[in-house]
Length: 409
Image 1 (cartoon, rainbow, N blue to C red):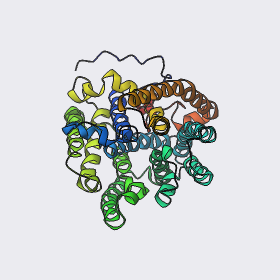
Image 2 (tube, rainbow, N blue to C red; image 1 turned 120 degrees about the vertical axis):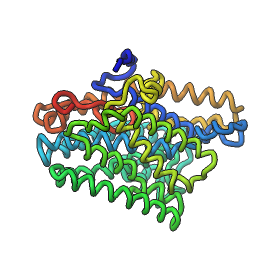
Image 3 (cartoon, helix red, strand yellow; image 1 turned 135 degrees about the vertical axis):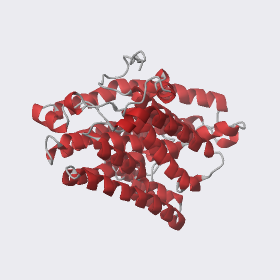
């Protein structure tokens, strides 16, 4: 098997180790879909020319969210299981705490900025009660339930943070399950698979009974990607990669990527109801096949790996947490101040402002958050419990996606 030349990581990105370029590229593609999905705020559908099949790129937000959840479920569960070999109880819990602190620090910086903008910008007319309650819910990772129950009151500029709330809520429970069942791996896999099937069914029923909005914001209806990734990790972590998987990893990754592309194209023909039914099931299974193939021997020269290792996608994936956190506040700010402009100037201003914010925040905030995590969890004992390195190793947009160093590989 030949090896592709390494892709240089720009100096604007804080240093990480053991990155998987295709997984970062997958994150980059996913965050691009999220941004395009929310671009309606500054580029309304009525202002767009007929796009035909390209219109799918503006409708793939749910596909991207499911992909992010599969990546998180797989990588975070792997690290929790690896940490459990060092300390059955404290290993997974310390790792989860380390990860949650890293996420929270960057979320809280965003929320402080939102509060300052609300105070200083006269065009932001959101009420004091709605702002304070929205910020508190986002800061405590309960924003999905707040938005679900107070849709008209929640702040729109931090609306996408429901994604992080669902993720954190899931892994609080998952960590406890790992603590209890890490040494009973078959039972752990079985529970994850049964819960996955139940989630598919429950999401469709909730959609039929209460509509897409509640189904989209209820943790138990949106955790299918997290469960699928967790089930794959529980099946494979700590064991030699099965021969059949090594042999067919490239084909598995390529098939998953093609299926995801097909599902994305189907958004042109299928409405939101499709995602809560068959389209959502296929999305989760295809993303799982892609992630498992990439993580277990897919050739770097395979078509899937080569596409996802494209440098712009990799760089975007490595900065995707910053993009995810800040794109909607920027969109809403531009809408308030430039909503009456012509389309092209408005879009150019949006792109410039978002690009500048991402570069500044990624240079200034992300490294500080990593430094705080290293300081808090940098003792030899805590580092060993969490997996040997307090730097980012898995999960959400922007975090490193490779294997932990040393014997965990």
